Image 1 (cartoon, helix red, strand yellow):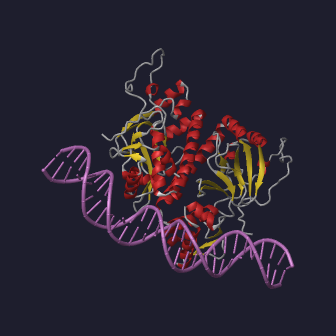
Image 2 (cartoon, protein in one colour):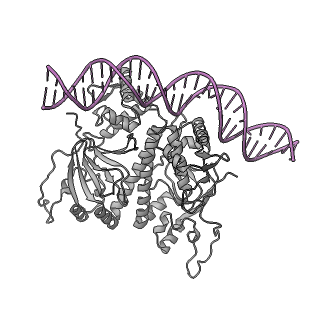
Length: 256
Length: 256
DNA sequence: CGACACGTTGATGTTAGTCAACTTTGGTGG
DNA sequence: CCACCAAAGTTGACTAACATCAACGTGTCG
């Protein structure tokens, strides 16, 4: 229940074997759900095999953390399945989610000594982890991989900066509306239970508290604004986690 | 007056000539103030000469924009001297500064079709601009340059995410205190009129309005909080733009 | 069935925004 | 040099938005 399924693949092959028609050992990568969308897509088969050699699969349960804020940067990873959050907090306990990560996204801090934010699974998740030192070395030898990573990082920086405008300047109502549209778009992307068009009905991978932590609002304000949108007939909330966008045009208007 | 001087160099050589002891044409780069700190530092002399061939110097007056939000990404650049802001806004005129850029920083959006934020000079500035297409091609052929750019982008992403916590969760007082400490640290860095230690006395390169746009506050709130810090004896405000940190420990406490 | 986490709703308080008047500063030209 | 002006900054009174505190559902699981 409640768990969001977020992967393009049905069942994956979890055994090693021979890739059909080739002599080389078959790697996990051949059957990877995010093979063509993650940064690995930059690599030739032989390089991919080498990368596979230094990585390993790992599963995370919802709520489990992979990386902790302020610690040495030990791990980096690709997300194969699931949704994770990046978060920081103040000493006195205020938390802020600074990023949300979906399948095919890259996580961790390569080329840096420490990690500036925690990484925690919001749903059950599967990731492909590398020791940072191994990854750094490998990346240094494979410019195409670094190029992909650079592109991704630039996109992420743009998105993050866009989010600053929302945090600093938008009202609670605008924040919630923007958030719902964003979720609709993102969960509609390939790899997330869908065909690429924005969804009008979806399950949120977040609790009210987490929505608050993303938008810089309290749980009560989130609840009130959602209720208000529902009263206005713009959305419906069939269950706690489910959202249906009834009037997208108006919702976009509310988003400011 | 009021212009902040922000460059390591005194006078630069602005004429071309022969680099002493070499046969190749002397490039601007040889005398560039940020030669060793900008991403160009990754390049060998011959490569640097090639890069120099596709770039050109440009000066900007305070207030002048180099790049506009939403436009095609035509230019990228290195900052040689001066301070610039990156900003976005909503349709109804609310503005948010999403980044501040100092000498040796890189600006613009390589490998992408459009620019998501404007770049405007806050002080008189000097930059080294490249046509994006030229830069993209050059970067593709020089992995060391891309590596430097990747590192810088990762650092910038970390900093930006840290700033989200401030925007979303900190009070006006904490924002102002954090901001002053940040400015003290940044203006104390090499390249900005200093020796590398945080400054206890400096001129802000920002108007009250711009401080508000950075912190997500109104001009009145900025003014009130600064006045309050002054009343508390934590800082002094000798002139409009000047700040003196009298009690750094307390200021850090206020910063939360 | 009962416990518990999660979510909603209401009453009240605080913070920062808004509107408006006023002051200071720096620049310009008589 | 000084008077004047526009722009920037400050201060005060009031308001709106969101947080806080508290009580009250609701769905889930043992």
